[in-house]
Image (cartoon, rainbow, N blue to C red; front, side, top):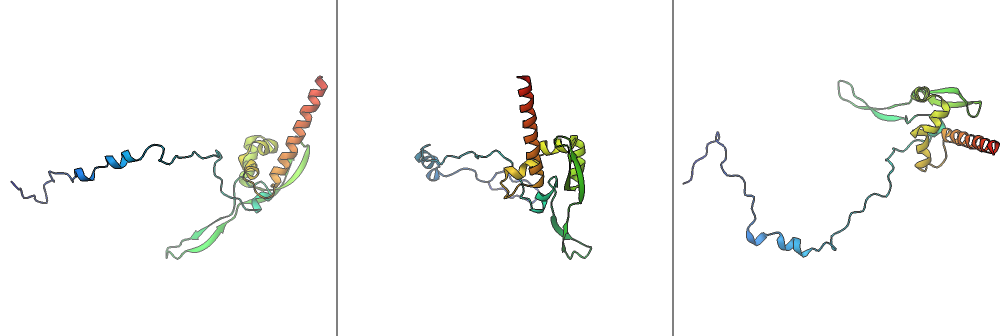
Length: 167
């Protein structure tokens, strides 16, 4: 009854997928009651994890850019360490709400984002890169966060004056 299998034919019987009756899993599973099983707790925070920022990026508007590190890899495959610095420019930007010019260290990517969002005030109020420093609990507020707080205070003051004028 035994057939000799050549290397060109397929195996007619799959690997054993059964357990002998002495090794049944039913007693093991039934011994554990649902109360004894550990409960899985959902995460308590819903914020996304943001990579930590350097103190340099808190001193201006860097739009999430920071120093990156890596290797130069030539044809010989001998790696040498290097770093990529963000393209930081010193600019004076105008805030319409505060009605003043403010000096910033700003990356070219942040300048582009400021243009897309319609001005410095909109960028500071709506950009996640300005807000994240506050939510992550970085030791000190960045320059962007400080100007943002001034803008928010000025807008609240203007709203209060409008309400008082109506009443």
